[in-house]
Length: 141
Length: 141
DNA sequence: TATTTATCCTATAGGTTAACTAGGAAAAGC
DNA sequence: GCTTTTCCTAGTTAACCTATAGGATAAATA
Image: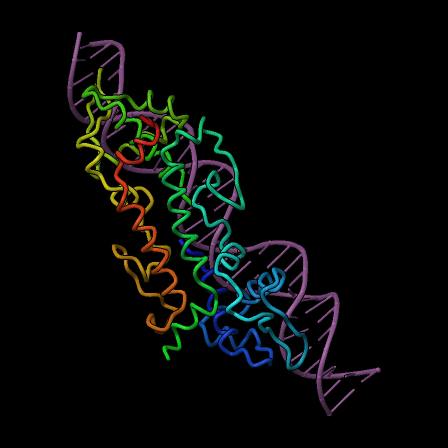
C-alpha cells in the first residue's frame, strides 16, 4: 500500500511543478488545492526539501518551489525518499539490502526470485517516468 | 513491504508442492524446515486451505497437501489471498476498487496514472508465474 | 525596531496493523 | 478412549502511520 505521505508528497510535487513560475508557493495553498492536512503536508515538504527536491523561502511571500526541472527528476528518486525501498523484501533491495534471518540461501529461495522480478518491473516503471511525465497526463495537450 | 504472512505462506506452498507425494505433511515439519513459528504458520495454512489452495487431514498421519498441480496455480491468486490487493492504491485496484475521498478526478490525477503502470507491471509478473515456476528455481535441473 | 508571515523543528497522541501466542474444540486413527 | 493432528477464537505486544501542537527561526515590511 502506498502511504498517504507518498501520495500527498507526489501531489504536492506535481502541483509545484505545474506552477513553476519562480514565485514560491505556500503550504496552505497546496494543502487546500489538494485536500491535504496542512500540518501533515508541512512535514512532508520539509523532508522533500532536505532531500534536495525543493527549495524554500521563509517569511512573507515565502513558500516552496522546484529547485530543478521536473523532467530531470526520476520517479525512482522521489519514491525512495517518500516511500522507502522499491523492493518488497529487503533481500532484493538495491539500496536497502538486508539478509533474511530465516532464509538459509537466497539462491534457492523461491520468494527471492519472484520478488526480484517484481522489483525489476517496478523499477522499470519508475525509471521510465520523471516528475514531468506524470504531470503531463493532467495537461493532455 | 511483503508481509511475513505472505512470505511464510509462499514458502510453505513451495515446500508442499515440492513434496507432492500424496502423503500429507504436518505443520510442524514445514515450520521446522522453513524456520517459521509453528502457531503462526498454522493460521496461514488455514487461510490457504479455506481459499482452496490446500487440502488437509486431521489426526495421526494428517497434515496439509496440495489439492491441484502447482502449475495450475497462478501467482496472482496466491498473492491476492495472502497479501491482498496487488495495486498500491485502492483507486487502481481491479479486485478491491475504492474511490479516493481526497481526489476530485481520477482522470487528471498524476498519482493514479503512475500507479496504474506499477500495478500492470506487477500483474505481468504474477500472471506469468505459477507456483510451479517459482519452485523450479530451487531445482535447477 | 516591531509586527506579520511563513517555514523549521521536536515531540507526541491516537489509531491501525503486523506478527505472533494461548488455549482449547473437533475430528481422525489406533 | 487415548493420542495426534488440524480447526477456531481471542488476545498480546510492538511498530508504524497519520496527524497535531506549540514554539523557534528567519524574512519581509511598515
